[in-house]
Length: 332
Ligand code: SD4
Image (cartoon, rainbow, N blue to C red):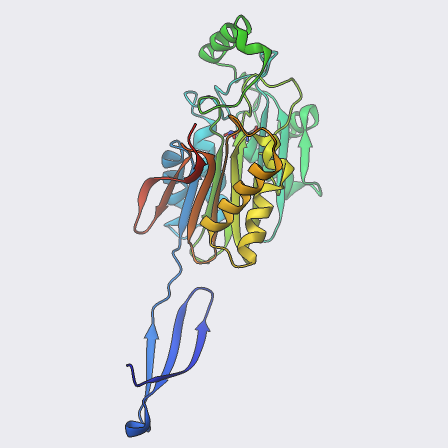
C-alpha cells in the first residue's frame, strides 16, 4: 500500500461507505484496485441525560430497532421519565415551585426543523406529547400556561394532579427551612431529561422535558421548552440538548450554539466543551452553576460536557447500552 497513490474518494450516501480507487506505482501502473473502506454511521442510536436515560432509551430503542422513526422514539422515550413518580425533576412527582404547583416545560424537534413546545403547563402528565401536538396540529411553536392546558384537554389529555405526597412533604419541609430564601440548583435538584435519537434512515429528532428548577418562582420558565436553548436539531449537522441551570443555557442559546459549533467542524465533545467554556466566560460567578450539554452528529458520534463534575448520560445503539460520564471543567 505504501507505493500506491490515492486517486479518488467518493462518499456513497449519507454516512455510508467510502469507495476509494487506488492505483499502484510505476512498476505496475495498469493495476487499478477498488477498495471499499467501511465508514459506517452509528445508527440507529439514542442518547439521553442522566441515569433515568437508561429506561427511557430502552423504550426509544424498541421503536428505533424495529425501523421506527426518531420522532416517535424521542417522544415515547421521555414519556417513561414523565410517568416515573420517583423522578423529582420531570413530570409526575416533579418538585413544585415555591407555591407548591408542579409546572412543566417541554419541547420536541424533528429532522425537518419542525418543533413544538409547552411551558408553565400544569396538571398534564405528558407535556412532551402536548408539545408534539402543538407542532403537528397548530401553526405555532409554543403554548404556555392555561392556554397550553386548555389545548391539551381539547386534544384528549387527562387532567391529573402531579404533586405526589412525597414531593409535597419535601416542599413543606423546604418552606420551613433557610434554603427557601435563595433557590439554588445543585446536583440533587436537577435532572431534566433531554433525548436525541437518529433512526435507521439517518434522521435526527430530539425531546426535552422537565419540571424545572425546584421551588422556582411561580411563572418561571427555564431553557427546556425553548428551541435553541434546551434543545436544537439540524438534520444536516446533528442535535444537542441541555440540562442544569436554564437561565445560563438561555444566555448563550446553548443547544443551538453546540449545533452551530458542530457545523463548523467540531466533534460533539468539542462543541459541548466550547459551549460550557462560553457559559463560564459569560458568568461572573460560576459557583454552583451547573450546566451540561449532550450532543450527537450525523455520524452517530456522541459527546457531553458540563461545568461541574457529575453529569452523565445514557447511550444505546447496536453495540452499546451504557451510562457514560461527561467530561467537565471543575470539581464541586
Ligand atoms: C431548568 N434546565 O428548568 C432545567 C432544569 C434542569 O436538569 O435541567 N435540570 O432550568
